Image 1 (spheres, rainbow, N blue to C red):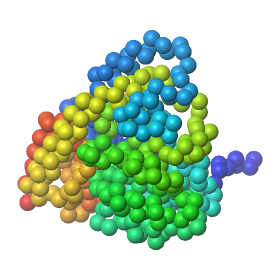
Image 2 (cartoon, rainbow, N blue to C red):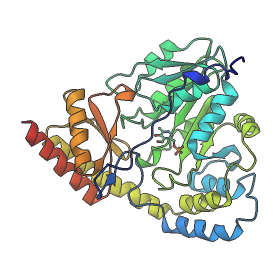
Image 3 (cartoon, rainbow, N blue to C red):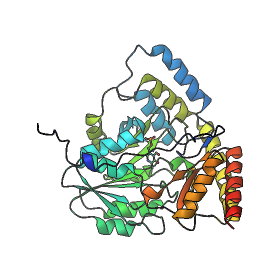
Image 4 (cartoon, rainbow, N blue to C red):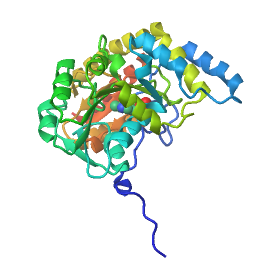
Length: 361
Ligand SMILES: Cc1ncc(COP(=O)(O)O)c(C=O)c1O
């Protein structure tokens, strides 16, 4: 019998590897491998989700009007230019599916988020990896890699797993320099952690080739519910809505996300606490001789002498119940990505890294 074959590109996909959550034989475990909010969601979001369970027999809204209105109000953008998805991953998928296909190229960067090449392969396009400069997105290198086949450029700003970012002028220079017909996707999964940064919303408002994506999984602490959104010119939103399933978000997701985005006091509290603890942790790591770049996110990329030292530190942290992320798959084998946890978690990480480094000397 002939083997039934999938669409081109599908078998090129390397399966996404999520952050580990358990350590064999260790009970008091702290998960610092998925950049989750250690404080959880706003109590208002939890309460809204609970109340929404009384409506489980009803289909949810197809137009997400309530959530889009709340996003529009809080972010001062037009709700008609917003699309919501099952995590920002789904919005990124709508974009790839709608704008790239066989024969097209999708650009992402050296240490970019691993979903970008996956999404490119899934729609039959060719992912093109562009070098970064010392773990920072390099606009000139991206522009040099563009050609008439380029359809999408994905960058996360701030970036995962490096935690670095480029400023809005650089994003604008990138958007301005793209070939006709190519889109710049500014993935703002970590945008809220950078005070005063709009995630690129101002660029979307003033250009026809920029899309911004955002998530409820990080600062809003709702990773388990899966909600994200995108902001784009109206004609692009119209396109993306055509590939979106009508009931992609449940009543519970919609209610929780709306309450979360409206609870700006809670969001600010999480941002400020993350900034404080991130600074503390970076200093503690520095005292133990572990280098880091300035992070604009809710994690820190710790750099070790080589891959062997990073692996050994990862193993030691695991033995102490601390699960962090190895990032060899992102071209950073000598690094570990450590989510900024609550204060006790940060103290445990600092202490364990200190013990590891003393043992190494
Ligand atoms: C840069 C980046 N973009 C997008 C996502 C996906 O987030 P979501 O949970 O909204 O699908 C993540 C999640 O880790 C991320 O790090």
